[in-house]
Amino acid sequence: MSPISIFNVNSSRFILTGFPGLEVHYLWISIPFSSIYVTVFLGNCMVLHVIRTEPSLHQPMFYFLAMLALTDLCMGLSTMYTVLGILWGFVREISLDSCIAQSYFIHGLSFMESSVLLAMAFDRYIAICNPLRYSSILTNDKIMKIGVTILCRSSLLIPPVIIRLKFLNYCRPHILSHSFCLHQDLIRMACSDIRFNSIYGLALVISNLLLDAVLILISYIMILHAVLAIASREERIKSLQTCVSHICAVSVFYIPIIGLTMVHRFGKHLSPWVHVLLGNIYNLFPPLMNPIIYSIKTQQIRRRVQRLFNFKKF
Image (cartoon, rainbow, N blue to C red; front, side, top):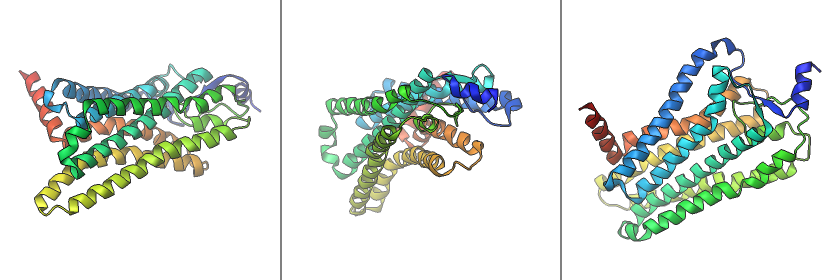
């Protein structure tokens, strides 16, 4: 075994993987990544600012959108230090404690985004299938309770499996598959009994991501059934258009997760490039695209953003 491999096995630090074979081009690669992180930060802050300052947007739909923007903002910040640190050359390794903390935030924020998307699907279901009771069902008090439930669900279920990572014996080379830490990446390097992590982790995925996806699908089946019962073609189109932004947000969240899960389960023979690329798409694509989607597809947000930029010109 080489000296590097011995160090990797015996140390409590883990080597982060950037873009294998392109180390000499990291400075150039950092330019688009820096631009993406800046866009994530500014885009989600703009959505939050618009919703906060525009009284006409103080409605349930936009409160949930604010939760989504805040989650996306935190998701981008959770990986910025290690991803840009590798590209800028001042980060190469990460300690076990930092790695565990980062994996907690990444997975917790993923569960939170899934929960927010489910809440937004419920909002669309009530708005279309029971419009007369919309304001009485989704009161500010109910929205606050939903928000607290989402926060508790996303933050309190994960610690048992994340804390156990601290007590595993990592005897395999400490080389991560990504520029950040994931639970499935850490247990891959462990020689201890990982049955609890595997079973509990799978239960978390099923009870959060999979259950949310199924409930979102059911809500849209019911929405489609209600829309098809509307006599007017124009009203049907108008009702469906209010769901386009949410459908796009669901797609940009779940498709990268499915891709990354498949690669971790069945793609061990694939190039490290595939792991790195899908990992970055999983973390950056939803936070990047959601502000763009809602700024383009949601009329109220689009008009307010246009007014914001027109005001700044003068």
